[in-house]
Image (cartoon, rainbow, N blue to C red; front, side, top):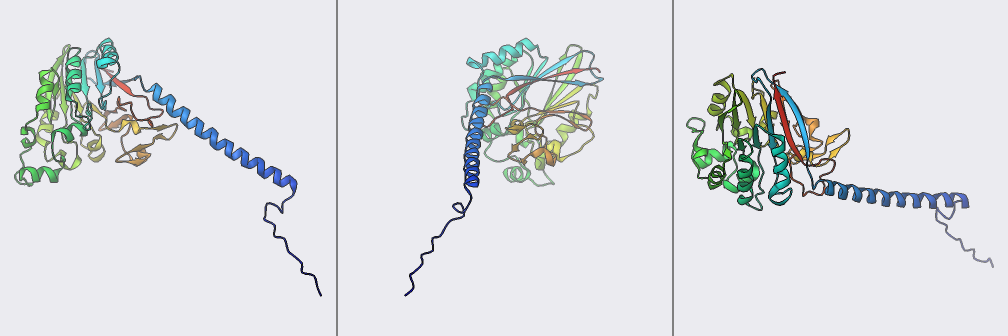
Length: 333
């Protein structure tokens, strides 16, 4: 009788030589260690950025125009979403006053629609207007708080019963707006598809604020007002302010103004060295690849467009993208 032979099964690891086993164990420990190192580095980076974002930086730009005979300084605030730098924004306001602006422009989302804190914006507007002539352009958060419908052409036509043959582009401006009234009583001018002309030193400056920045409704609900701004008093310096940059991406007219300002993108939230802004809601990942205006200075119709990264600082993923106060100096050359 033959004895039964039992076959012992060995797994692949057990079949390796002792030296190979030692190397694999070392590689596993190294991989686990690297995971922990990367995780710790990410936590440190996020927390470091969060702490750094408790303060704002100042980004200076220069622009030129033959229409000016001395420096015109414009300060832009955007996308604050109700944050404060010091009690009642004291640190922010003191720095703005030190910078001695000629014009202050708020390009929207100063409040957050989820909070609906109008007192915050009114208090800020009152303080700004004591420093220099100040303007307020609505962003998507103000629009959500004030209007009960999106400001695209389809919804506007539906709201007013219009079509392409009978549109009245001023209809939107006739809707009651108590927020605008409060802001203007505080001394800050709200611009809704309209311009305001002020004298800065010896120069005339036209500031135009866009309300419906949705490309579908921009021309149909603001064409006449915008063309009047562009083509009347052409010797005046022209500054165009809008919350979102979409119309600049969509259209290519001969002239948008001598300087264009917008925000909305939060600078792409996270900025990756070399690769640039990481993400916007409308443009997806690395939105500059598709020609989106996300952060910084661009050229449109031969003039500078500044896209602010904004002053909001509550997003934990806002990394390498410190909140900013934008300062633009316009000189003759």
